[in-house]
Image (cartoon, rainbow over all chains, first blue to last red; front, side, top):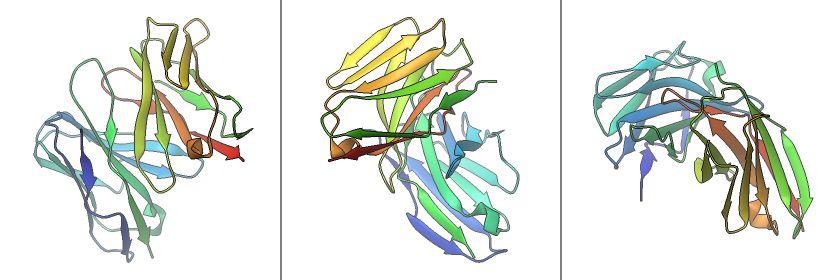
Amino acid sequence: DVKVTQSSRYLVKRTGEKVFLECVQDMDHENMFWYRQDPGLGLRLIYFSYDVKMKEKGDIPEGYSVSREKKERFSLILESASTNQTSMYLCASAPSGSHYEQYFGPGTRLTVT
Amino acid sequence: GEDVEQSLFLSVREGDSSVINCTYTDSSSTYLYWYKQEPGAGLQLLTYIFSNMDMKQDQRLTVLLNKKDKHLSLRIADTQTGDSAIYFCAGGSQGNLIFGKGTKLSVKP
């Protein structure tokens, strides 16, 4: 079974703090993704990575950065958290190839106060 | 780019069939997917259909694809209270998936 884990299920941070969200997958997948999910807006892609040290901006990268130093780990960084970054953050991984099935982690609900 | 549209809510009675509809714009999508999200959890892949198929059945789930109209549907037979969740359709190409906003299915006993 593919397993995607995220470092925290719930996180509360203060405005201006630097926040790290970690995601680890155990299936040797090349592709990894970070989404945020907000009511009425569905899933929006923040960043994705096709390989180690490679990253591509998604639809809403502003205010975020990512790091992929190892194949199994993809980190999302909020350099200076703001209240409008309060959201559910979902990580996913997928193998390369024409089948784009993505496997999701359980999500991190981040609250910025 | 790809756009995926779904209705936001569906309410059915236990034992009835549920049909969740989705329309998409990108005809180059090779696969189309249905994901389920239970409260407080991540997305779980339910089923998928290859773009050259019209129908796929998997136990209580039936996926219908009308490529001409770019319409995808998920039918759940004998809907149970445990089927209450948000259902997302997704499609795409170039390695990325575009998700609809999700349909919240409520099952009344």
